[in-house]
Every structure is written in C-alpha cells, then in structure tokens.
Image 1 (tube, rainbow, N blue to C red):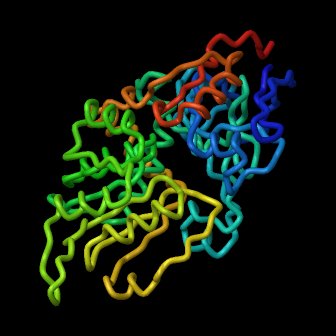
Image 2 (image 1 turned 180 degrees about the horizontal axis):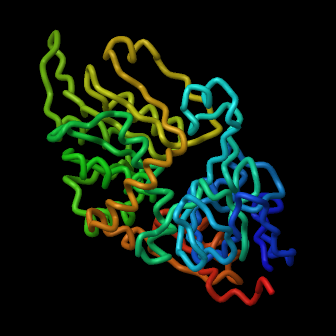
Length: 356
C-alpha cells in the first residue's frame, strides 16, 4: 500500500509499505477520504507544537471496514465509518477522572503517533463510529467539527449571546456554526478577506470583522457590542464569549481584549510562541478562560446525528480536493494559499492496493 510521510518541514514522500495486520479487538480499514487540517499544515511548515519527524500525518478521515470479527459494537464489514484519533493512556490522573481527551500522555494520530494517511490502517473497535449514511467525504469532516464543537461547549453559550470567533479557517468556521446552532449571535474575525467572504456567503453569520489594520477589531467590537462611559472614558461592552481558533499570541490577545467584563474566552488554537501581556486584565474583567483539547466520543456521536439531521451542511466546508498521488501538491498549495482555502480533502478511493 501507499503511505504518506512528512520527513521534514516542506518535504512529503509517498512510501510503499506492507498492509498492516490487525490485532484482536481491531478492524482493518480502507481509507476513503482524509482531510488536511491546520495542525497537518503546521507539521508541514515546522510550526506545530506536537509533531516529530518523520511521521505519517492525518487524523480526520472516513474509511470502509474490510476485515472485522464479530463484536458488540454493531460494526460490520462494508460499513463506512469515521474514528476517534486521540489515544489516551488510561491510567494517568486525567484518564482516571474520565477526562480522556486531556490525557497527560495523549497521542493523537498524525501528531504524537503515526496517522491515517495510508491506504489501509487498523483501529481499535471502540474508536470506530458508523457513519449512518453520511457520504464518505462529509464523514471525513466530522473530526474537525468535533474539535470546534467541544471547544464551544466549554463556554456554555446561551441563546442571544454575542460570540466572537477569531479565525476563519476550518476550525473557526465550524466553531462559529456550533455557536450559531446554540442560538448565539455570531461574528467571525480574520485577516483574510476571501475566507470571511466565503464563510459569510455560505453560512450566514451575524457579521464579519476584517482585522487587517491596527484598531480595526477594537472599532468593530465597539460598534457591535456598544460602549459605556467609565470615569470619562468610553469603553466597549465586549463579547459575551470569544473563541480563539488560530493559535497565535496576537489572536489570543484579541480575545482577551474583545471579551466583556465577566465574559468567557475559549482557546482552541495551538501554537508554539509565547505571549507577554498584562494578565491583570483577566482579574479586572473576571474572565473565565477555558482551554479545549481534542474531543470526546459523545462529540462524534452527537455531530454525526446533527449533520445527518441537516443542521449543518458540512460539505460546504470542503473547498479543495486532491487525489492521493497529488498530496505533495495539496500541501504545497495549502501552504501558499491558506488565506483562500478551507478544508482540503484527499481522495484515497483510487487505491490499487488490496488485502488478498
């Protein structure tokens, strides 16, 4: 079979490998579609915090079950499925408390362990979830939606609250969709005008903020949320919830600054840089700040049902598609044109490998 490796920043290789042999309690899966996410792009660029080289990338995917034993999960040969790619150790303090998504020794596929970008992979049965009739392409986009959905849930958003999502990439747009489903008035902020335009035209959020110059976001926060006079100074009211979906110091600062007094900030983005800021602002505003890592089984199951019910047209998040043999071009294009591309999907369905 073919397997994709990132050998070093900017260097993609397609290797020939043996098809893996499943162990007891595992199924053999044939990859159908795989999504390149922001962390995969960061791994390609050398900026992702959790990646070591060389490694097989990929943790958002759909697949067909080609080999499986009788089981109690309702899984059968021929089913189209997706999988939970976050492997937890099962015995650390987080795992013992049931917070398996924040395992102290978490190993996410394509990050701390080899990922799914092969024509065949094996997976433990308890990590495999039936697609319930969703197309393989849509099913491959469930995992990034889970990342966004899990983060948005941290804020316990109430109907009518004003929510700012900083970052109009896939995770940000999906976070905005999740907040919208929860009844929020959602505004999306980015430096890339094309991404904002596509997101607004496609998903119809309450508004977009193009943060392309100093003071642009501050002015927009004032205009959208209003202002009050405090000791002779006009101060913006701020957003009830701010969600960071980029992973840069300046975008986290954006969220701290744009949040209302008594507001909430959720950090989904992942970065490697430090931020030096006046942390007393957290105390002054009595901000509630939440980190969000990975997702849980219930997030996958809930979102498969939600997408199946037509609450979000997840296929619209997919803007570009490449064949497996063109994956190096896919990464290179995404690297150069990240401001115009959302979900980049790799088509594994022309597999010439077989299990015979």
